[in-house]
Image (cartoon, rainbow over all chains, first blue to last red):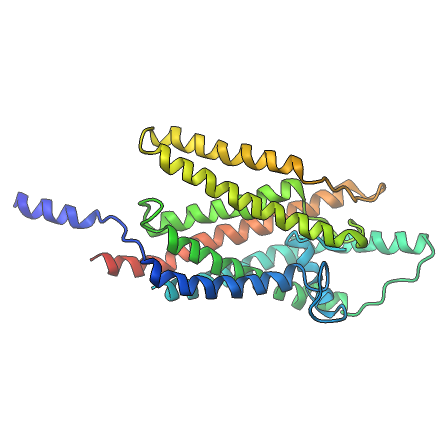
Length: 73
Length: 238
């Protein structure tokens, strides 16, 4: 009985198992690249720098850029 | 596993962004409109022609705002999930939901709150167009410095944890982050481009809304992500 209790208690307190780095790294590169592109278009495109000419992107995300705290005109 | 986390992080970020959008729309847009009126009145007084609306205000304050916040939420949701994936079972022994909430709090402070103490969010009419390049550069520099200093603080915490009580180690780690980051900020130049007669109440309400948006975004992202990923780890452990 005490043996069973001890075993079941032990299995309830499990130390978190880390995700192996080789599983993590490819996804991390993919995720960071996508995220940085999104942040770039919200925060800096047609402001500090411009990949696309004109002001349309800047004007479209204008309110969000201000309210999310990015420097704007 | 990491792929599952990334997808869930982006979905959590998107859902959190929907909540943040409500606050931005209801509370933030009021001060944006007031600031634009101020800018238009100042331009008119200076004898300048009104700005041509390339995108109408109606679109900017709805679809434009929603798109910007959703992109931001998805991006930070993705980064959030990757930090989580790296930290889980490695940096500490927190359960999935505890760790999720902890990273949300840390993310809010490190990615947003500390950098904006130096370079606060500004409404339209505040900020000189010609300095946009340097202002954007400084803002991102402050953000990168904040991340680097936070990692330094975390490393110090983990080292001290072997010798000290958890509280003492945490206090020293946190102080390291605050002091080192504070010192780096004395090097970066100050920016003050608020027009002399710009109403202080509009500025305050705008910044209040801006900070509120981030609290809603990070807070709900932590709660939603924690709830979404907990089943992944429970089945893994049994």
